[in-house]
Length: 384
Image (tube, rainbow, N blue to C red; front, side, top):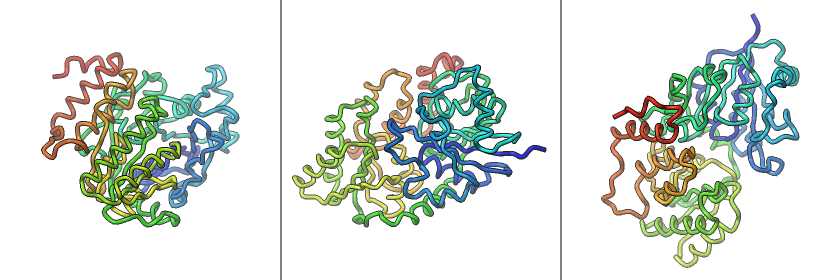
């Protein structure tokens, strides 16, 4: 019998933590060898640290036998752009088996974002490997963003996901009948606790502070840089109006420094204390370390982990205009924005504002799945 090697593909620390939680929960059968394959998908990976060099990764490393780099394997090409020619697939599979000492191993793949490169590329190169998909955030609640080749889609065994919206089932890959499986919240919190404890350089944050989450939406072309700056300032004003005198801003790791300077100017005007986190850490690390009194964001997945996993008060801002601006309509950010808009209270809204009833979410997601991807989900047209 050939040995089984399972290759776990990861591009974010959040995804790596999800995988570690799944492994600790025995979501995977025993393997003979486990490899963590790191994708660095940033626009300029040469200047951006990969997942295995980020603060907090060390406790996760022990879950795998070896850590590999996809960027090194396909250098000088970019992971998000490189796709081999169909005729070259057997050649590249042999190359990877030699490079990673796979021999004649039975390979299984665990990937995120199966719809696009590099995850789709890896799945296409190992043509007969069973595939497990795990969700790295809210997008899994929406439909598959692209029509996937059945030669890949029919090999997907299941979708692993965190229970970010309790009771709601993801729509990702349902066109292939892929079942969804929840990664236990307790295991994820345990992993996050170990990850947080390993980060020594994190500053001490004020008690009961308001944590503002930056997403760098201008880089996605959703907002202009000026509009995003204004959104952050509105976050601060809204938190101050709710009585918070200590503000913590967690910018997106690739956001420009001037975003922080705009907030510093506004903090001075309002007479509040501002702390800017310049260490590239997960928001969940801050939830673990300081338990903020309020978490404010736009449609960040961290808003849902704060609420569902840590029991923290949350508020969103700016989701309404985004629903009109997201283009094309099939934009995979649409479902996260809709969920944030419907389930999280508006920072600038009235106290009596109501969120969507839980029993309406399935119908809403069915409607969104059909209108976003009618060719993938034609049966949903007749859904009530």
